[in-house]
Length: 373
Ligand SMILES: *Cc1c(COP(=O)(O)O)cnc(C)c1O
Figure: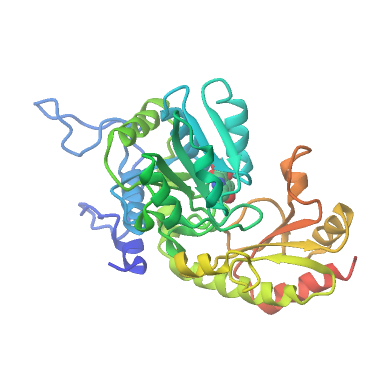
C-alpha cells in the first residue's frame, strides 16, 4: 500500500458488533480473561497495550516500513526510553544541534550512567575518530532543529553497520511521508507525534519504530510497559484521526515553505534562510536524495541582533508566536530565548513552522513584521 492508503487502512480495524467504520475509543483499563487464563481480545491491561494504541502503532509501522512501533506519551519519553534501555556505561554519539530536550536529558538525567559526544553529523569524515570501545549508538536528527542541517542517513547507516552500532534517527521534521530512515539503513526511527503526525497542536505524543524485532527492541518495549509512559486511548484516537490526512497536509506544508523560503532568500532584511529545499542549502543534494520533499520548517537570520528578531516575532498578526511545529497554523519563534542562556542557536535566528494558510497571507504578514526592523 502507498502511504496515503496505509495512513487510512493500516490500523487493521476490527469488525465491531455495531459496525463502526472508524475505531471507537476503548477506555477500559483491564480486559477479560477466558477459562484458560488467556486474553481472547489480545489485551490484558492498558499500560501494556490498548486497542487504540495498537492501531496507531500499526499505522506508524506501515508508514515507516518497520517491524514494530511503540507509541509514547510524548516525543521526549520516546527518546528517553532508548537511553533507559542502554546499558549503564554506554557511550553515545549525537549531533551538536540535537533537539535541546534530548541534550538536556543526556546532560542531566543520564549524566551519571551514560557518556556522550555531540558532534557535527554533516561531516561524517571525522565520525569514526569519536567511536570508542564502549560506543553503542549513534543518534541522528535530520532535518535538524533549528538549523535544518541534513545528515546523510545512508552513509551514516553504513558506518553504524561496519562498527556494530545502533543507529537511531529523530525524523520528526520530515514526518513518515517525506523520509523513511529504515529504508536507508537506520535501526530505529523516532517521531514526536505532537508535531506533523498530530498536526493540529492539540495532542502530545511520541513514537519509536524498529527495523528489526531484536533484544534491544524488547528492552525498549519493557521500558514502555514497566515505565508506563504511554499515551491515553483518546490521544491515540486523535493521532489516528490526524494521520489519515498526513500525506495531504505535508504537500501543503512543503509547497508553502518552499515559496516562503525562496521569497525570504532575496529579502534585504534577511541574512540567511535555512531550508533544505533551497539550492543554496549546504546539504541540498543529500536532502534531494533522501527526502521526497523538503518539509514545512525553515529558519531565518534577520539582519541585526536578538532585539531585531524579537521585533519581528512580536509584530506578526497571522503567525502565532509560540514554540512547537507541524500544526495547520503557522508558528514563529525567537528560538534562542526558548532554549535558554546556554544555547548555541544564533540570537538573530527566527524559526518558522509554515502552516496551511494561504501563502499570500503568510508572506504579507511577514513582510509587514520585517518592516518593523
Ligand atoms: C518536539 C520535538 C521533540 C520532543 O517531542 P515532545 O512531543 O515535545 O516531547 C523531539 N525531537 C524533535 C525534533 C522535536 O521537534
